[in-house]
Length: 157
Image 1: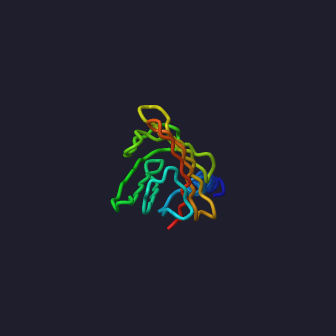
Image 2 (image 1 turned 135 degrees about the vertical axis):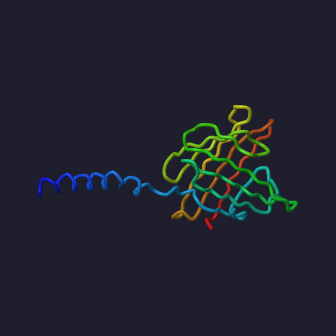
Image 3 (image 1 turned 180 degrees about the vertical axis):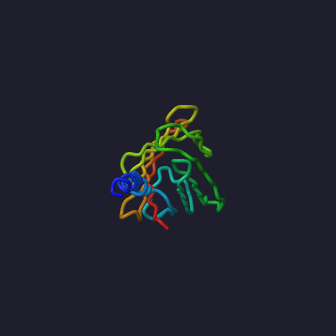
């Protein structure tokens, strides 16, 4: 009886050990809803916005990004994309950029590169801190000869 039980126990143990990595993978720190804290943020030039919300969700082995910005006139502008952390270009719906690519630097830091017609024109660093409660996005870019930069601070909802 002992010889018959051993293969069964070995198979169950092997299955359990091979399943551990799937459960041990950390949750993506970007996931969730983030609201811009205008008082802590800086823009140059000032885009005259009233507010901004970003929603990150897990999708297709990467993330989906949806940004809603309330303009100074009270209109809502949206931008969205789905991308993986593989550095490959993904299309973005945006009035400024054609594509973005993402690269994970560490568990709380992501680099995003924005392109127009295949040329990199914008870089952003996204950092989650304060125990997952704060997202800081530092952006630099130049489009059609106009340089811009921002430091955007978001609170997790």
